[in-house]
Length: 283
Ligand code: URA
Image (cartoon, rainbow, N blue to C red; front, side):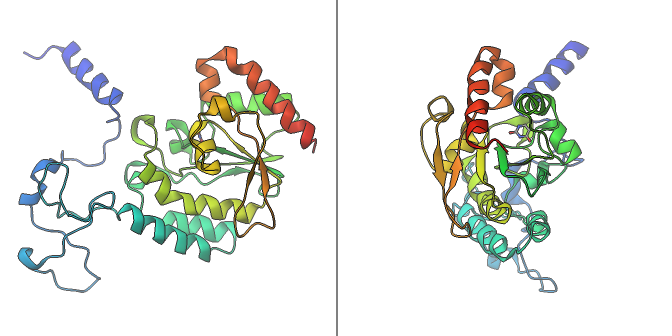
């Protein structure tokens, strides 16, 4: 007989490795997908090709060999490859002439596999006319449920930090590197970041902030295209340039509030960085 503790331990293990979302009624064995009938990307109305002639579907991240990690050809309808996804994102983002258009384009974009497991597309919060634009990493569980960035525990800490220097969501604008929650809050992959980055770059152009504040290492490294970790980047001034901006925008990376929750001693550095920001941009 199966012990209830074993079931709970098995559930805990699944959550710990990131399997915390049910996305289908039946489990899908990706190792045996090759044996299933092909589901090719065919234009609407086109007749299905026989399996032998079916186009090799794209693998998740651009490996055009059509082989899965198990060595078998993958014939299911998978997301676009990384370079295709990036190119498609760039083209769609560039067409957006307003925040509304950009949000619609992002919601319609299927090039990032995270969209399939997320409940919501988390676009932004705060005042689009604000001088200060904060950029986090990716939505967590609360953000995914509510569809807004930084509404969970780390968001509450962020609000308290901002309040200490006279700021709130009416005087800042907030978005993330990724608009979709990585399952189990794992770190985003480079392919996921590359697929979504063109939307964030256009987002920054449309907002045209006076200063950018990346929160945490992923955001700082992505925006600044640098390899150093956040402890080296935080509190220093950099420039961010993009063709659609009238000039370089100053950037000051800060520690992520989730990191501060785990390392309260680091709050003194965060306090110093907020004061540095307010000295240059008193509002
Ligand atoms: N952490 C982030 O980086 N972004 C959010 O929106 C929430 C938590």
